[in-house]
Length: 347
Image (cartoon, rainbow, N blue to C red; front, side, top):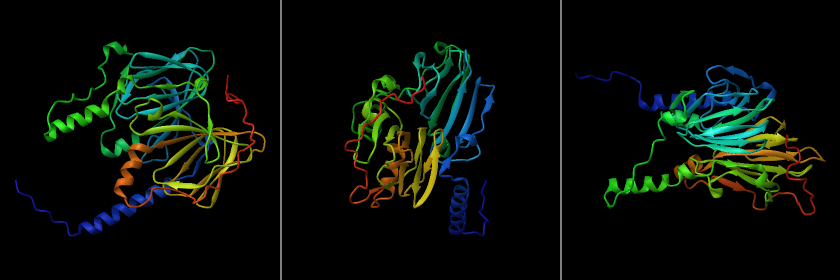
């Protein structure tokens, strides 16, 4: 059957309107600080958990790259099991419990951090007498844009009876295009099923950086993880001090674990306190300040760095997508007496 396009509007007008409407919609949702008190917690009967959305399509502020959710596990409860095509980072705020990843039970306590790999069956449990609270950050919105955000529910089926993770195709010899693709994908996939899945806070220590904070990796490929680009770092700001100013492509999301302060984003000050989420838009000059003169402030910075940032860097070359001042305006931390590594950590 032959069809004929009859539209009288040019591609230029259609694309221009589409791009403008997308930006207008995004600007209407954007906030630099999302307050913990504004997050609405809701029962999720299908999963036996309570959840609230800081930012993401599942809440009132859709996003295009990352999402941020907080979860509460009641005492002596466990969730159903599910898996999805995106990976996620899980940070424990309070309480004690466990997460089962492809049948492996991992016990956790406050400030431990886990990686939930794509296509890994997982569920969470709390055997204690008090509730447990944890946060998740994922790249579900980005995969949803590409049409590959797939979610599969296993209910209470034992993990041994569920399908295993999809496996990457094996490499074959040859120099033809198909052989080269298989070799490349097999190499990229290598090690995923044996990669690290938890950083126990008991086992890590921060190091002072040139940018003006004591920092440590929570999730990153440099410490044995195999993510699709997600990384997480904990920054600790000295009392009354700050980090140096910089800007970059891609968003930076910072969850305030403890302390109070403010962030200056493109010259505008935004106050924050424990429990808030700071969202720094791409290419905005920003700097974080600890307003408490006696206590440090701890922030967890989450990036979708390798996947999104590297793609943007190629697409937008020759633009420099990471920029600092010619001389870092970081504070002099010589002589700072840092508190005990575990100070402020819930028991």
